[in-house]
Length: 280
Image (cartoon, rainbow, N blue to C red; front, side, top):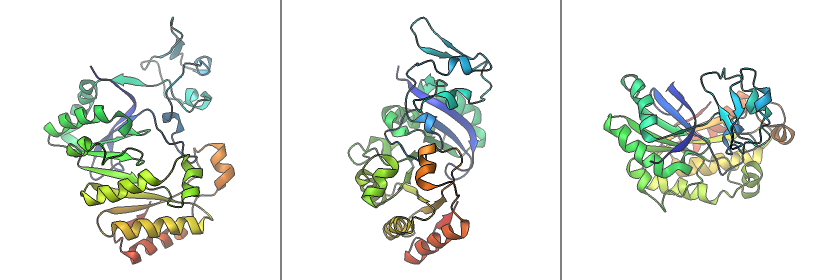
């Protein structure tokens, strides 16, 4: 039976798509964004053991096979293990089947509009998502994918057949700046932006606005706004240094993007034609 690594499930969220939603965060991501606020979802645990002795609740141990074991009943979610991890990973992973996930979704079903899958990068589990969404839709709920755009939706359209929309990050459009930020080319992301627009599956686009990066910020906003028009929401996200890694703070500084500064880019986006642009 197919299983996938689940980092956490939030039963009720009002920030992961329209309405009230259950958000499922999967472990693993092919990008390595400097500004990632949950870098512990990037890699799988390698059982180095660095976290075990630091767990104040005794929820971590090393099994006979050398693998780190997590006792979710003893865990107090203090995040000591995450702070100690040298590999951008977490030992607090549940390998779940679709039935396992659906048991949790059904508990929330009377109170939610749908399910959003995130991460990490949830499309790394695309075969699992196809099975999961088929079950969610039987409940009459919508299914959204929160993606960094690294998965080629056009090359394998099966996921979109059971998905109501994609919430897409377009982190930057200047090639060198994108690679510096996330460690990968922008090309597949921009290809997905065009394709999802064409097939009517673009739920929203999100771009980060960084302090002092006027040229890069404007290039991204002009490109995205010129593409999407009023087809979907455009979230202009203020960079916040809290929780990011030190390498990010060294590059981008320790200042939060000023709200008025970000609003200037939202206004620019609306002037270009992205009428649903707003700052978050």
